[in-house]
Image (cartoon, rainbow, N blue to C red):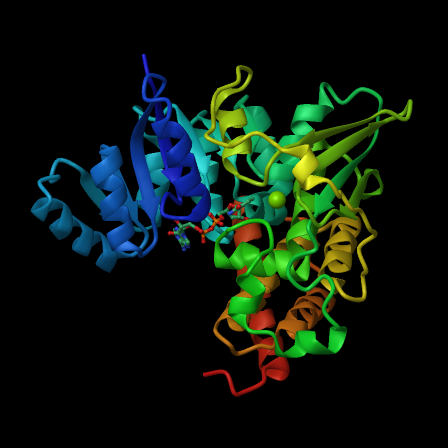
Length: 392
Ligand code: NAD
Ligand code: MG
């Protein structure tokens, strides 16, 4: 019997890496459902290769276009739907056993929660889910007894080195430092979206690439690690390691430090999670340590990377600060990608939103969504103050 897989965010970087791994193991996995946002041509190509039962496009226009293209391609048996209800619906389908949660940002929360509620096995790439709704999400995971496996390379590395967590002193999340680690600070004001998205070691979606350049990505990952491994901020450290060969480490009370190494290729954590507790081929080449040779480490400079400090502060202050942080960051990053906000002001927008809004910890999904919405409105207002040109 093959295992039925749904990929939320199939047209993205993680989605495509997942499909690459799955296609190496057709005897084990069956692609049941794929979702995307607007990229119709890319989804058409994926449908031709993987022949899912069902596709959901977030945008209704995209869904209509895709339906016509599928008909022309002789693939009219593939059902196409659109909208948020349908996104959650595919995650619950009876023929789906396991869900890869690889939508970027807060848009991934509801479909990923739907997978959890339906008791599916969940592979979590969408870290924003845990940042915006960590307690609620993990409570539901426990209540439904769901198997949740981390895809984020650092968390997958920690998971591989963590065993049952006994005797852990701290975890060390590694960070590449992104493309601007050594740039003079004054040059950061004028960087372009393409410069920010040119990550030295990983090819990723644009939002996470900008987050890596500001190191907000590492901040989100600190919060993600807090929820996944149930550790306080004091037991989570970040170390810059520009080569991205060590994907993270776990230190034990006896001084042992266990690390997971490999070439920087997301197919390794994806294959690890899909096969767990077995192992399977991922298509990733062997690590050549002699060629990697020089592994460097340094402390993150919080003046260069204020977003990392903001994320640590949000985790420490609790309440709904992480929900506000995530929403304000999404607004600021989108404005930067739209060339309406200078790169160096992303942190200021997030900081201003955090200073203005200090809601209590949300006790239900509606409360999370309301805080997320309010934080976007507040961040939008601060954005106008920090913007270079008038925001239309
Ligand atoms: P991406 O931008 O390449 O892909 C995002 C996917 O989400 C696409 O399929 C897109 O169609 C879909 N999407 C976007 N907005 C949507 C919306 N409003 N409604 C429904 N679908 C929507 O991003 P990515 O790099 O693949 O990252 C996906 C997630 O995985 C992010 O949360 C990211 O932080 C996490 N992640 C990515 C990497 C990586 O190497 N790319 C590594 C670790 C974690
Ligand atoms: Mg990561």
